[in-house]
Amino acid sequence: MANAAYHTPGVHVQEVPPAQGPIQGASTSVAAFIGITQSGPDVGTVTALTGYRAFIELFKTPDGSLPTDLGFRYLAYAVYGFFNNGGTRCYITREASSEAAQTQPGNSEAFKRWRQGVIDEVTSWLNAHDAPAPNATQKQKLSGLLSATRERLESDPQQLKQALKDWLQSLNWKAVAEEVAELVDKVLLPDLISLLQRLEVALDKVFESAEAATLSSSSIAPALALLEPYDDISMVAAPGLTGTEQWSALVQHCAKNAPNCFAILDAPAGADWQNTPPVPDEVVQNPDYAALYYPWIEVADAGGGENLTVPPSGHIAGVYARVDSERGVFKAPANESIYGALDLPVYVSDRQQQALNDGKFQNPENGINVNCIRRLNGGILIWGARTVDVDDNGQFQYVSTRRTFNYIRQSLEDGTQWAVFEPNTPALWGQITRNVTSFLTKLWQEGGLFGTTAAEAFYVKCDAETNPEDVRNAGQVVTEVGVAITKPAEFVVFKLGLTSGSATPSTSS
Image 1 (cartoon, rainbow, N blue to C red):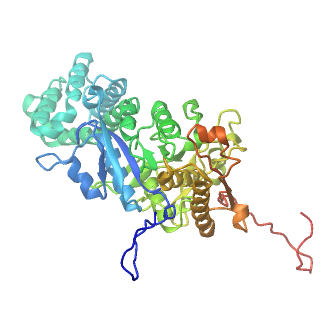
Image 2: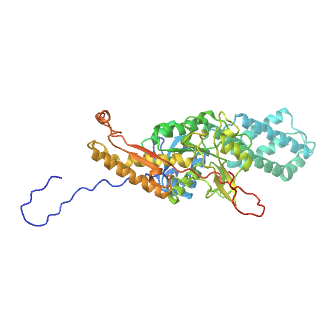
Image 3: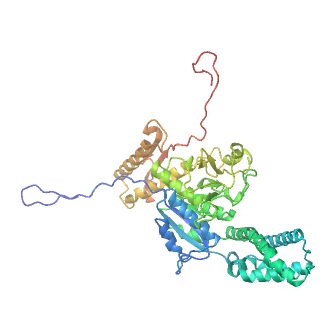
């Protein structure tokens, strides 16, 4: 600042602009969730949320109800799990369900198998009641009846009862009409309706499987493109959307379009990976930008029914946020409880986890790392800390390593914006060096960098060597930074043996 001209004797105080403050750590706990739902906020919009209640308000219809489709269920339980496990802020965007997903798949092969199975069971049931077996025509009538079973049970049970009664009376019973009517009303009809209601559970699974298959084949690329401008997002997930193209889209979004973001992937519903480990080629590109979790988790049904099995990615994102807040992004988000998880649909043993935790154990050419969720010590714990990457020589084999690197990069990007258009001189180089050094020193002191001294943990170089004339002429100021990020103690090994009278440590390796 130029010297001011003073004309009156005395003390004069000037206000001077402060030096650029220290670099602040970037947020690592903001998540983004993509859902494919039949209704909700407009497609093509992104909404920020700070609590589950806001999510409910976002999706609530004018009459106060909520969507009931499978895509909404995946998304809703993921958002709830995120906030319940420690998340504080997330973004939501949706794609509309395709027409196929909204239509009951009455002509699907799975439905046809269910319908034939019911006909077989009803025929056996009739035989057990000394009733004549239905002929081909009568079976065809029953088939048509079953095609409308779900809707009739829900909307007009009396209509179904009358249709069943008419069908039973068409079976050429060897009795007079009055006796048939009494037998149908008092004995057979209630029993048969009970049978069909039990079979409805199987029918629901048929429709749910068909809808899930449709959801997993839908594109999420437009939704991911909407999220690109939001640079505070550090985690992204598409709960329950487990198609390999969807996995690939999530990973490539983080690796190419949002490099400070990390993808959390769900295993497919009902996968039997503890017995047959996966080999999905589509995830191999840039595998260090994602982590994959297996199996799904069981949570309480918000409607008060039996436990529901839901994708874990929303809960996992909440655990990431919780660990970041309590310990730091450099702490692996593993050996951590998943709040709200009551049980698991399948249990994985130590032996079975070998081929999942280390994808190269069983598939040396094309394996992937899978983080298991296990019931241990009375709780449901995340029992894996690896990215999908199986490269033993890779720098980012662990989730915490990749996310810490992303954190450092984002913090430096945000914390040095002041330097843009400043004179490219040694004074600028010195100021950048001081700010970056101060930031990394704090991270090292917190335990995020490895080394007994700061010099072992990192280095910062911004001087004439990194900024020669040709670099300065190109309008660039180059700072070289090297960091030694801590890695988790994944295997805690004790060498335990018996001694023969002496308790001194062995000198052998």
